[in-house]
Length: 297
Length: 281
Image (tube, rainbow over all chains, first blue to last red):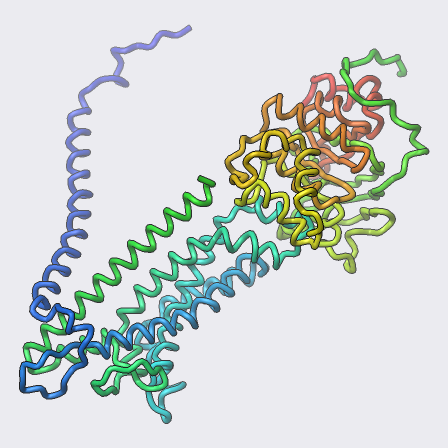
């Protein structure tokens, strides 16, 4: 039996004040870093909102722009909003099924060597600069035959694909193997197990990943400059022709001589920001709701 | 040396006397089976037969390859990358490991209950009905579900809340739900991989009782590390142990396979005796 010697150096308090000070300083740094991140977002939102405030009204989303307008007739960027909705929607329709199928193949069917190889390819694809994707689609599809909304959507789909696939793989990995085994153990074929057991369980994560991918590409400018930027001012929804989009409109208006155009660009930027914020919140909400549903409550 | 061995363990049993072995119909013939992960053998050189309408228990210390072995019976190891096996597992005379056998069809006939309860995130009803629906047994589905849940001794507890999530049940109920799910599709054999290891004694007893009642219809193979459980439920018992090969190799090996009574009261191998008397493992 040994007794604990409480007078020894092990329990002495001499180092405690110093340790407390270091702790406070480090905690302060961490707090400061978090505050900086929040402040940057705050400043961006504030400056965008304040500069676009004068043009932030219903006309912005309902009225088409009037070229070389010398009057004060109300005008807006309805064409850009329509175009962004069409192009991002089409891009999602293209990227979502391919992304999910890639993920399902890699996680459920592919041997490990292929899984790692294609996984690496997805990471590289996610890192390809948007402007490179833009010029690629330009050379592949646009050059010689002209721009169109659907070509712009194709470029955005290329950017979305790795995000959707990665997000889907991440949630498929989280589906417990015991569920797959339960289904396969009944004599259910693997495709049916994947379709009826694995994917429903992962659907929440897939939706979350897709919403985030949409939010990301909705603000892409570079690929659209090459593929869907030579446009008129009338509002239309036809993806076989070039469609104006919010990012491209912001880019063009920022070079205008008219300060009202600048304000409109800021206002459009603000709406884009709010949309992305809203999309992220929706994604979070879906994720928590899904987690609760899976827990069986 | 051949001293008579005293009964090494008192066995409380619900078993009826087993028919003589030559009257038994072998459903599985395992011959010289090696199960290998990558380059490491988990089980080596197993040869045994499994008889119809009996409960066969597989006992042995942790790491002796019991679970790996039982998963060879329904090709469940196919899902593990790097797994290979040699030797044959014949089921009604057919080698289920040969290339022209569809593992889905094998699993259709040989159901499995896993160590941890793994109900689908569906309602209690759908947990049982889903497999039947997918496998085309849609006729009188309600009756089928009720029969399976009754056989699994769960019906009385859940009949008023069949729409509730299977995950809302307790652990023991979930495991019985998994058993109901497995027997609802009417397999020939039910493999159970330590089905009671996560359950309390009462739930364990319920599961043992239902195995006992259902063995007239099914053949059970149960892996357990609980010797009392094997003694209570099994007609035949196989004892696996860890053997050491050259270069530090460790693998599971079948030491002795005999009637449960014999394994627990008069084992013919010293290692079996050490294990069942608690001197090892």
